[in-house]
Amino acid sequence: MKNFIYLFILCFSLVNNQLLAGENIMILKLKYGDVEIELYPEKAPNHVKRFKQFSDEGKYDNVVFHRVIDGFMAQTGDIKFGKSDSTDFDLRLAGTGGSELPDLNAEFSDIAHTRGVISAARSADPNSANSQFFICFQSAPHLDRQYSAFGKVTKGMEFVDMIKKGDPNSGAVSNPDKIITIRSK
Image (cartoon, rainbow, N blue to C red):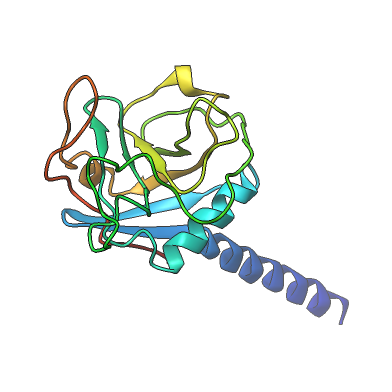
C-alpha cells in the first residue's frame, strides 16, 4: 500500500508539472510559420500574466511589428495604434500606445537578452511597460537587468528572422509584418 501511495504521488507530480509547463507555452502565428514561446512566470510574473491575458483575449491579433532593427530586435504589441484591423490603427503612432490597463513595474532578473528572448518594451521609465514587447535577433547584453525579460522562443526562430526589417537607424517599417495570433498552447 505504501508503494502505491508513493507511485500515486510521483505520477500526480509528473502530470501536474506537465500541465503547469503547458500553461506557459504560447504559439505565435506569423505568415512565415508558427513560433513557440516559453514564458517565465517565476522571473516576471506580472509581465507573463499580462502577455497571456492580451494573447488569449486576441488583443495582439493583427498587431504590426512597427520597429524592426536587423541584428537587434523586432518590436510589436502596440494594441492601441498598431492593431491593423482597428479604427485607431495609425502606423505613424504605432509604438506610442499601450492598453487601458496600468503600466507594469519593472521585473528585472538574471535572464540574459540572448537570441530569441522576449522582453517588455518601455519608455525611459523602467516602470512604463504596458503591452509592447520585443524579440531579440541576437544577444543584446546592454539590455540585461534594464528590461523585463519574460520568455524565449523555443521553436520557429527562423520565422522570426524573416520578419520584415525596418530603417537601419530608427527601425521604422513601412508595410510591416504582423502577428496573426498568439495563444496558449
